[in-house]
Amino acid sequence: MTYRFGIFEFDDRAAILTRSDRPVALEPQPARALGLLLSRAGEVVTREELRAHLWGGDTHVDFDRGLAYCIGQLRAALGDAADNPRFIQTLPRRGFSFIAPVGTEDGRSAFDVRRSSFDAENVERVEPRTPNDPRRSGPGALLVATALVFLTVAAAGWWTLARNRAPDRPIVAVAVFDNETGDASRERAVSTIADVIVERLTALGPSRIGVNGNSKVLRNSRADRDPRLVARETHASFLVAGHLQNKDGRLSLLMHIIRLDDGTHVWVQRISRSPDDRLESLDEDVAAQIERAVRRIVLKDGILVS
Image (cartoon, rainbow, N blue to C red; front, side, top):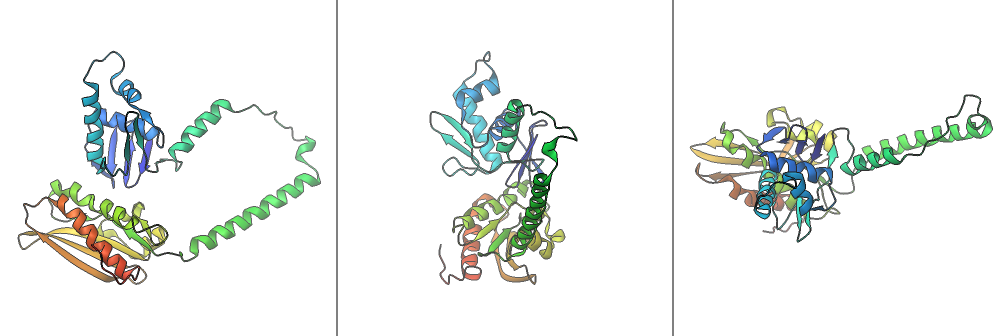
């Protein structure tokens, strides 16, 4: 089964993890641990359950060290942190829980998959009705059918209005940043910047601002990104985007905030670094600058904060 969470996908049959359709290296045992956590998303997976799943009962290993290594590898692959988890939460002396929303390839949540499996095992047999069954005909059945048609039409109308209604709060879409240096070793560091920005903007409060970093359209490269399509798919008013380039012998990260109704840039900022600098150190600086700009331009706070 393929699980989807944030901008990640994991195929538990092939043990392949991808981020924005790009493969993420993951060793077999951490991949098996991820499959179990995703299949039980929102639940506590005990340490003993993980031990049995990964090593079985007949294998003798330094379990604590092996499990710590597996979880550490998972967090590194997902850009997660133990002290402020977005995906894998440690429950001391109990186990671990996958806390992010998880969907599957057919659009259902992992919880729905588990529930439907339970229902299939416990469903009651219902006596089939024949074409002449009085329960299928008569004025009562006609009234029920009419009511169902009315409710269906009303629900469709409400959904259309709700979909097209302007949101009560501004929504900001955050695209995956582009690595335009030609250096594949920088791919992972660049691609994680968007996650840090999403986390920082979400902390401003869901009642004040909506943040969309999950839509598939946000994975398109800059050359293939259509502002009108982004607006339609994400319902956002503004887009945060950026790209890393080589400029004058230095690394140059250019950040943008784009107003989607007309495609104009309302804020642009460049950060320049030595080619030897680690890009991971840029995450918080980039997120802080974008947060200040969003507060000023989108939320109209008028106060710059660090």
